[in-house]
Amino acid sequence: MSEQQPPNRRARLREQTTAEIKATALKLMAAGGPDAIALRAIAREMGMTAGAVYSYFATRDDLVTTLIGDVYTAAVASAESARDAVSEADPGARIMAWALAMRGWALENPEGFRLVYGDPVPGYQAPEEGPGKEAELRACTGLLDLVAAAWPKAAALQSDSRRYEWTDFDPALVAHAQADFPDLPPTALALTLRVWGRMHGLVALEIYGHLRALAHDPAAVYRDEMDDLVASLGLGARAEAE
Amino acid sequence: MSEQQPPNRRARLREQTTAEIKATALKLMAAGGPDAIALRAIAREMGMTAGAVYSYFATRDDLVTTLIGDVYTAAVASAESARDAVSEADPGARIMAWALAMRGWALENPEGFRLVYGDPVPGYQAPEEGPGKEAELRACTGLLDLVAAAWPKAAALQSDSRRYEWTDFDPALVAHAQADFPDLPPTALALTLRVWGRMHGLVALEIYGHLRALAHDPAAVYRDEMDDLVASLGLGARAEAE
DNA sequence: ACTTATTTTGAACGCCGTGTAGTAATTCAA
DNA sequence: TTGAATTACTACACGGCGTTCAAAATAAGT
Image 1 (tube, rainbow over the protein chains, first blue to last red):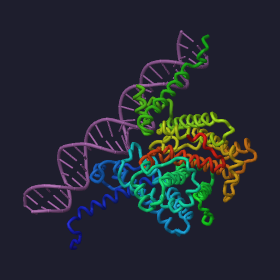
Image 2: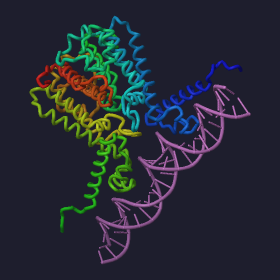
Image 3: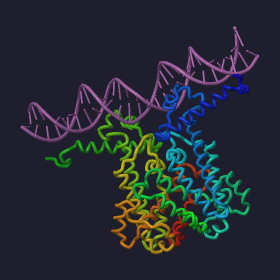
Image 4: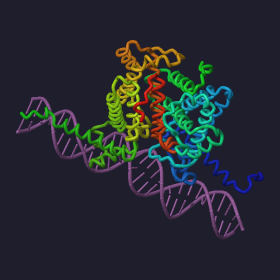
């Protein structure tokens, strides 16, 4: 009977309700796409009024922003753990693990992918800062780590076309790069973004249905592409392909 | 007697109104994103009632489908003409021209890009057939032509990991490939899709705002990536980069 | 028990897509 | 030319949406 919840049972309830709102929103999104994230539908599902939700999120876009942060963070975390399950001795396999984890997450959670990487929802404008940006930075630094591990071999294979400066890139990313990999040149950041784009392209096409009709086995195409990517970084990885 | 409007002035007016609806929809989309394509807003803009639009399009999704076809077709046409402005003697430059045209179109017309490649609009489900699919096929065959032109050199650089059959791919695409390039193996279709994904990835990230904060010059990164792509097809193209 | 802060309600406003019923205009046939 | 059929359109209604706001209900602090 006695209450061990210190001063604030209210804060506890609040957190609980907030979590329920987010969970309900994710459930609706999984069922009906990102557009199914409707405050009224959430409230109906939870047995409360639409207006009550405004005690927890100032606007629907705020809720969406929070969800993006959650979903993105979860995706990145799964990619990180997939990568960390592979020995650092095989950088190519680590890149492959990351790529396959990201694609796997996208396929299991296509609405989440649309939420994070697409037009999240009718009139949504992404905020400049917030948990979403943090997750995105985490994704980029994860890729940067992978590129950095491959850099000695990868550098020789890059065309030295354009010269980049540190100021060409996001300060937070640059800070991470310079702190962890002092010998890395700015070009490696450009390469990181290119790797990101390459991992993203086929998955985006697939999730949005542009690949389904054209190729019966998008997974094979994607693995080929990732094999080529790994090879282009000077890491001949083939063992984990089968 | 007067035969200039065959039998039907009505059909003429109809076509004209249809065009005006589409134009208004595109205008609204350019101004406020794909979600701004609202029948009521279009009707308001045109001085008629929302219900009247239903004489021209059975549903809003039908209108969106038509717009997707139009926009996609225009984009592909611009890529084709950019490609055709480059001599066939330089396949690498033709690929580069296609890629830069596509990115240029996306940047000039980001809402169109979202319409075609993203979640077009709240609860839209893409139809299996229609002008959109036709444009998509045209885009793929355009890429296939480019890959085919590079194939002799490109084939040697591909890892022979997975074996593809013709049945792995869309019949229409296969028909085009076999008709125009009898010596091309099925693997070339997989490579075509991979090239597509590679051209798409960075642009998608850029259009949806994931690149803007991280790199100040996405164009340079994209050109590097396309240089690498061209090189990976065995076509050392550098002339048109500067 | 009284005060204060927070949460929730319920109704409203203005959007949206979509139907339906009726009206006016056009086309076609006799 | 007249009558019937097709077409374009208006007006209105329905339900859903995000958002706001005053008032009521609930919890916390004193």
